[in-house]
Image 1 (cartoon, one colour):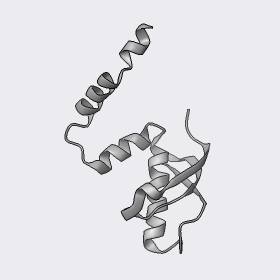
Image 2: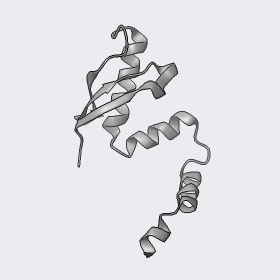
Image 3: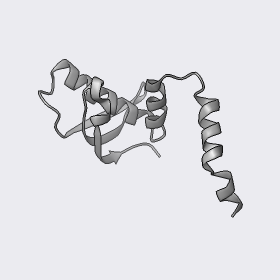
Length: 99
């Protein structure tokens, strides 16, 4: 049971505090999305950008593609939220991601 003692809420809280001590809210969200992969963060960002720019007339399910400078490596089905309402974003399915 030693492994469960290491993964306690107190230890998690300390890890977050050390890693993100001076981070702003948006950076915490970015770090959380990167737990999946960099492309997942990009998918959420481009979904919000598409809504904000008017490329999507209203939030609806879309396939978003993301990745890094090396290319696209992530795809998901999502309903994006506007930047001002980013927590309205819903990831329905992760189609592919690295490792």
